Image (tube, helix red, strand yellow):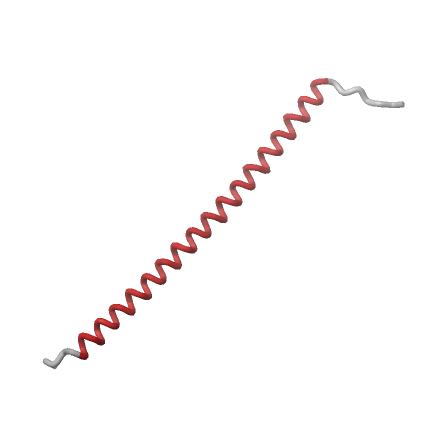
Length: 74
């Protein structure tokens, strides 16, 4: 048989490379998840602002209508 004898240094380098690759994948995954979470939060906040603006406009219009309905001086 023609087997290659591995030295301790080779195994150590492979382990370090595997750990580095695992850490890089983990960092990329965490970045992806935090980016998705951040975008979701920003979308919800934008939606909340849009709803608040729409409700504010509706209340202002309603106040004008009620004010004009009971304004007998004009």
